[in-house]
Length: 284
Image 1 (spheres, one colour):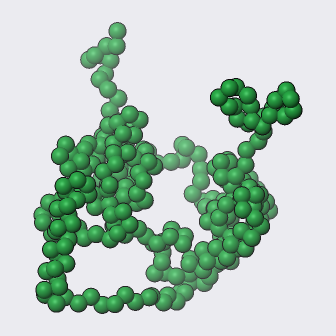
Image 2: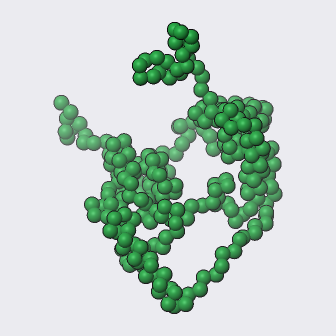
Image 3: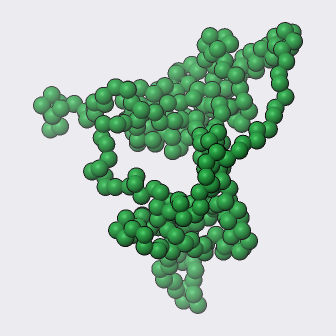
């Protein structure tokens, strides 16, 4: 249900505008549904499970198969569109299974290729390699970047540098194409309790400065909800991750540019900073 600004509910039934509590379905309950399916699959190995709750694509359907489901049920997605989406999901699932057999595409995430360094969708050269310093992509710095790139293109043209035409790769499956049965329960080996997680194998954030659009979202969330581990250069506004990073992934979650921020393994031991000890600076 929902409540309007005047306090009346929606939906409102009859002249009395009465309402009651409803349910929730679709992608909002997918995490809950995945937990339910994996819990059953771990408790009853091989037990047939009909999964439902948030299946709105072939990729999300594959998630439930990996969780241990053997049959999928779709409801909200059909209501949002029509029944023809089922054929799309079947085709997409076949593609996902086929891609697993091609070794050259193992760095893909499903049907999504690995993200190449870009600036707002356009491939860009590494400016630091051309001029020896980093430049952000806004204001007067953007004009400098455009000028540097134009000069580099002109230089290559003067040198009669030729670029081979783009060729479409034709990949041949080198592995057996898995069936649906082969992928059921594939993710169960990675699931466990919180106590089973390693607390020494930690990660930190790394920002691709060439892809960064200097929006400041990472800085804001880390400053108010994290450990203030991101600093912005006062002149170029390029972000820098400090040793205070705890690997919480808040910055990655709010960054509008996919793969601009990645999490990599921490190379140094992490020492938590909990503020000044009470013996040094008592609260009262």
